Length: 106
Image (cartoon, rainbow, N blue to C red):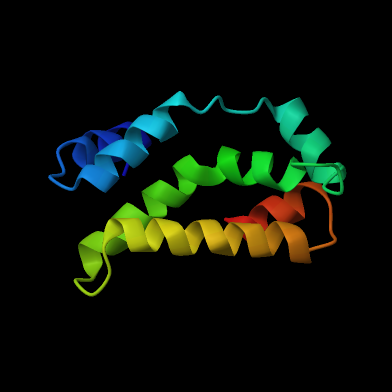
């Protein structure tokens, strides 16, 4: 499912927390390929992991939304939160560089 369709579906939610989250996500500026590569190779810098996780939030939202349609036990917000926690763990744990790390997060 396309990201824009997922965001549109989330905007139609009656949950105020989801609506506030969508507003915040729409304001986040995506990284360029060069910026992403820089932060991947320099994850020890202050806020590098935070910046990388913020860049992956659209992907996390897409995956969480698709899985929320398949299960009734967890909400979209819960799945997004778990995805963000997993992304932080992957970026902080993995010592590899570049594309391999990106594939670990995805």
